[in-house]
Image (cartoon, rainbow, N blue to C red; front, side):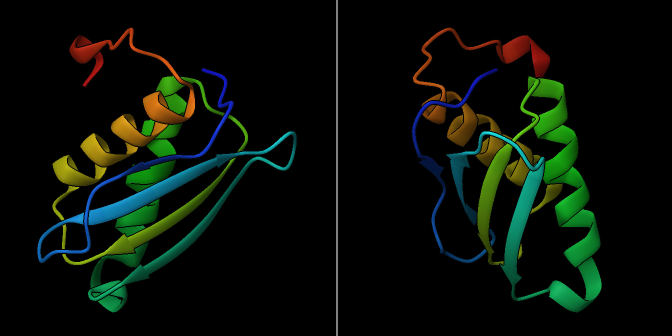
Length: 97
């Protein structure tokens, strides 16, 4: 999947995460993560973001994530939504989730 614009999904409400994706030409995936549970789950959240982007075929992107205690399934859903918005695509593959 090729990102062509900035895509955003989620909120900064409790138990949610706001994910903003921006396209990059090179440099892989750069993640900026702030979380209310960073000490306990920061590495797990980052791993879920990277894994979800890899499943979507996104190899270069800037990710800004503001987490408020979201579960892994919520993180995946927000990354999916932000990626499809950034790709300007309406051909969702819900079976991949």
